[in-house]
Image 1 (cartoon, helix red, strand yellow):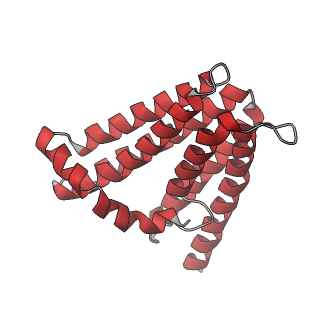
Image 2 (cartoon, helix red, strand yellow):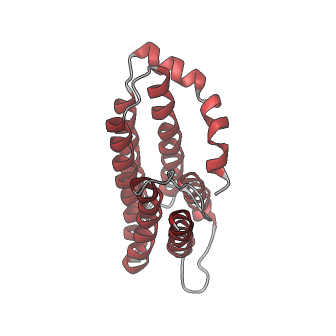
Amino acid sequence: MTLDRLRPLAERAVDPFVAAATRVGLTPNGVSVLAIAVAGAAGASYFLAAREPLLYVVGALLVLLNGWLDVLDGALARELAVDSPAGDLLDHVLDRYADILIIVGLAGGVGQYALGIAAVTGVLMTSYLGTQAQAVGLDRVYGGVMGRADRLALVGVVTALAPLAGSAGGLSPVGWLLVVLAVVGHLTALQRFYHSMRGLS
């Protein structure tokens, strides 16, 4: 949960891009839609990377771009004073679909569907517990071992290096990445659940 704490710094760094997006007439919702299109392209790259390993590098760049656009859409909404519950809902829904597309691409590319299910459920439960806390009257929870920013950074780094690494323990680097996403995802979800229950007691 280190990178989510740097979000204010990232939002300041994105200021020039907010200004550029404003000049060309981009809307926050438009950026959100662009972000999920990028995530879909990343997932497709990962799925095809078994035949062409350099596609892992393409996927890594697209994942990092997805994370950057995720920061940009919120910053643009605040700059244009159009941030709203509807925009927040759209952003969260598209982020979850983006997570699914990326993980399905990773799992499908290496044929590790059981690990993919474990990873995607961990990621979705992490996000669910974060927003469910808000639904029961608490602040939205971003804490835990690994937030979305950390997850995207990890996926980007591991897949960028995947063409250079060999298998270990019967799993490729991407297989081990799915194991980490599964274990840490569910652990983060349980941490958020515990934090929320303490807040309600």
